[in-house]
Amino acid sequence: MENLISLVNKLQRACTALGDHGEESALPTLWDSLPAIAVVGGQSSGKSSVLESVVGKDFLPRGSGIVTRRPLVLQLHRIDGDREYAEFMHLPRKRFTDFALVRKEIADETDRETGRSKQISSVPIHLSIYSPYVVNLTLIDLPGLTKVAVEGQPDSIVQDIENMVRSFIEKPNCIILAVSPANQDLATSDAIKISREVDPKGERTFGVLTKIDLMDKGTDAVDILEGRSYRLQQQWIGVVNRSQQDINKNVDMIAARRREREYFSTTPEYKHLAHRMGSEHLAKMLSKHLETVIKSRIPGLQSLITKTIAELETELNRLGKPIATDAGGKLYTIMEICRMFDGIYKEHLDGVRPGGEKIYHVFDNQFPVAIKRLQFDKQLAMENVKKLITEADGYQPHLIAPEQGYRRLIESCLVSIRGPAEAAVDAVHAILKELVHKAINETHELKQFPTLRVEVGNAAFESLDRMRDESKKNTLKLVDMECSYLTVDFFRKLPQDVEKGGNPSHSIFDRYNDSYLRRIGTTVLAYINMVCSTLRNSIPKSIVYCQVREAKRSLLDHFFTELGAREIKQLSKLLDEDPAVMERRTNLAKRLELYRSAQAEIDAVAWSK
Image (tube, rainbow, N blue to C red; front, side, top):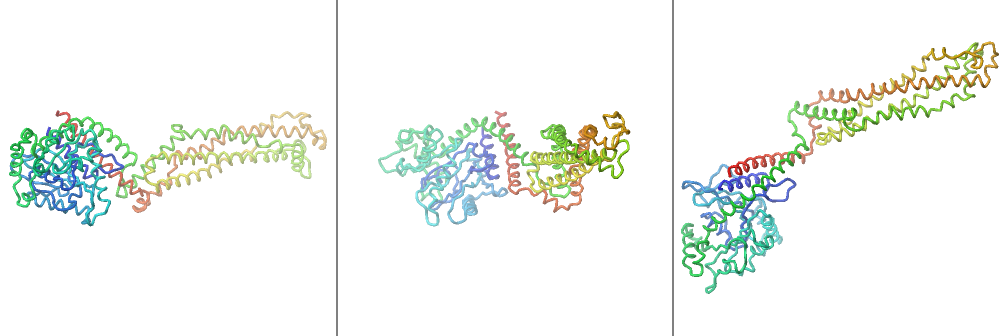
């Protein structure tokens, strides 16, 4: 089971390296899910002495006021041999064999983070101690709870420390080691008070009673140690720390442990409890309990890690790939994003995505309706027909049929078709532009680069404008062609009887009667309807050929040509990603690496068991 604690140790160090140490974060956090033992106590409760007794070394800063101003993650590793050394995570290549230097480094590293202003910080210090005289154990030493601020500290320091301690111990995976001095009323214990608030049933709280040897004569702590004064689900453990005089005289820790064992075994009140008292028993009991808790949490950790990996991968995919640094890489990135946009745009036109059907609606509905609304009846009213027929004859009336009059009447009607033809071109143009907006919004990679997004949109619109102009020119040519050359067969098939004004023996004045003019109007209208039927088929073909087909084929061709001539600075401007997005991607990638590593290691431990 020892490798379970080693595994958690490794994950805690990795979390801290990523800045994940229990603070609120917009990123998924593994730290909060890792079982840990947090040491809580008021100032002068003997908390530091308990930790040093567990380790068997003097290594913690001492002094008046608030000495511990940052969480200390103390990881103990049992090793073979007689070597003893310490390592800090912030100094990975340096081993400390002199534990006085360890104490100094803790103080110096605290000042590096908080300055010398006596402020506190929630960023932990990671200290690993390797020794044959320790058990595998991880403890988090938290700043001592206090009731007053000392000189140089803000009045808020009291609440700040409480908030920091609470943020650690309120997590359900945290085991609380509540340290209280026996020579003070337990009801006033800062450690018990805050532990009771976050763990009212005492299910994950271990009580540690210090300074038992300093109690007033005639009093003892048996009721507390046996759980009658304040009941906990876990054990109460008494310890006897070195006195200040022992510390000043550098009394050997091994000798201090021996004296502690002798105290409990020889003091009548505690003799029956001696087997579960003392710092050595405390360390072994905590190590065993931590192993049990870690083992029980492995399935939950595996589930959390698997779920979080999926979330991180989804988020990284949404943010897109990191930007290349060289010109070729940047150009390739831009081209790939543009191709993605172009592919989505084509899908809209081809019906894979919605939007393209609106173009067919223009051809099938809007354009025919617009032609039907043309008021040919006005242009072919009796007075207008007579006016154009008469004017076309000039000074010499027509001999057989008013050919020039027919042409002018037909041209005046056909010219009015230009309006619906242009409107159809513009309607399709508007739809194609709308689809550009849709395709841009649906190309997630473009959201990553606002400038590129704008430039791609502008380039697409410029291409569509050119296509619209070409389409309008060709479409109007179709109308003009109908004006420039009439379909002769239509007129040749017309009957040439008297009623239809075809008898040349009638006088010129008879040919301008109402029946004659009405027949001319009817004939012209029939010809116009035939032409409109033709244009209803040919104009959509022209529009599709010049606009839709070209939009599918070469929407960004001009943009691609222009891109090739740009320098790296200009390409960089197109890939002007939000720095916050870049930072988030980097953090997510590091966190994903942590979770994948954690998954592999936890799975290996789980399978081995």
